[in-house]
Structures are given as structure tokens and as C-alpha cells.
Amino acid sequence: MPEKQQAEMTFWGHLDVLRKVLFKIIAVIILFTVVFFMFMPTIFDKVILAPCRGDFWLYRFFHDITAYFPFLPEFTTDGYEVQLINIQLASQLFIHMSSSFWLALVFSFPFILYFVWDFVKPALYANEIKGVRMAFIFGNVMFFIGLAVGYLLVFPITLRFLADYQLSALIPNQISLDSYMNTFLSMIFILGVVFELPLLAWALGVIGVLHRDFFKRYRKHAIVILLIIAAVITPTSDPFTLSIVFLPLYLLYELSALFVKPKATIGKEI
Image (cartoon, rainbow, N blue to C red):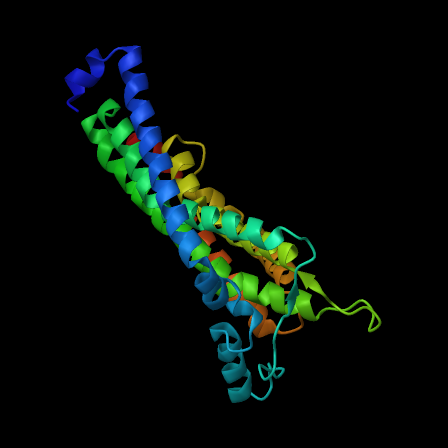
């Protein structure tokens, strides 16, 4: 839509365009939900429940590393399996539907961003379009990288520790399906949101709230805090596992600093 037509559009015209955008978003989410619902049993066995088995790629990688370096604690994969139980009559049906919806929401995210971008683009000046377009693309990419890190790295390590942890040998661990899915979805989505921090840092840098000197000044503090976070996620005595979680978080911190202008140039840029 040309900018002139956009400027002359009435309030009800804008509302009609917004209604069409929302309809497209809902239609895409419903379509993806139906598709994922049809294939959910296969996805559940091969993807969602994959960290419950000893042949998960991360476990095999840790096994190979610890076997190669004798000074590291041995990481075993033989016979490892996390057994889930269902204690609610309708849980499997509800989880089938909710998992389909959440996966649909994730994979429709690029389409949602495109529809939102198409709606706001006519209201932007020509010099703003490139920056906002790059922000949309970068935010989308970082979100999926965060999801991948959560699924491939953070969640399996957390599951491995918590599933084997026992306060007493008299208390066997029986993990419910609801508990597993709540932890799975929340942890992975949190990582997706956390990986949007460089985009947030860039936005705060553009308006002059944040500058690169801040990251330099508090780098040592950030390292300590990130080490504590990594230790909470992986409460084991294995420094290798700790570093595996710490490094992505620290790289995220440095990436955020890279996207922020030095203090001396912020005013000139704006």
C-alpha cells in the first residue's frame, strides 16, 4: 500500500486492515496446529521424548568426550532411559492438543512477523524500513537459535540431572507426563526469549539508554552471574558440562555488546 494511501486511510480503514492481518495470523496458526496434530505421535516419539533415551546425540557426545579424556568423570549412556507415567485421565489428549498448538505457534512465528511487518511498513519512513526489517529478521533467527540451544543442550542436561537426583534411596523418581512437558516447553521457550537479548540491547542502544561501555564495565560481574546461572542449570561437579552451558550464555552477552554503539557515537547516530 503506497504511503499516500496509508496516510489518507481512516481509522476504520486501519481497523479493517488490522482485522485482515489478525485473520491471516489465526488461519496460519490453525493450519499448523492441524498439521502437527496429525503427526504428533511421531513427533512425540522421535523429537520430544528423544532426550529420555540414552542414544540422544548430546549424551553420545558427552560419552565420546569423557571416554577420550580419562580425567573427566565417565558419562554413561548404556541402558539409560527416563520412564514417564500418566496420572491424569485426560492428560494425553490435552497434551496432544496443547503440544500441537505450541509447535504451531513456534513454526508460524516467521509468518506472524511477516504479516506484522507488512502492516507496519507503510507507516515507516524510507530510512527506517531497512533497520526495522533487519530487526525482524534478526529477532526471528535468534529466537529459533535459542529454541535449538534449549532443546539440544540445556533441557537434556537438566533432565539428566533431575531425573537421576534422589533425596533418599527410598524415594524412587516417577516422572509424570505433565511435569515433563511443563519443564520441556517452559525451558525451551525461555531460551528462545533469552536469545532476543541482543535485539533488546540494540533497541536500547538506538534510543541512547545503553552503550558498549556498559558491557565492558560489567563484564567481570556478568561472567560471575552467568557462571552461577550455568551452575544452577547444570548442578554437577563436571566442569566440562558447566562450560557447555556457560559458553552460549557468554557469547550471547558479547553479541549484545557488539550490537550496541560506543557511547561517543550514540548521539551522532540519532
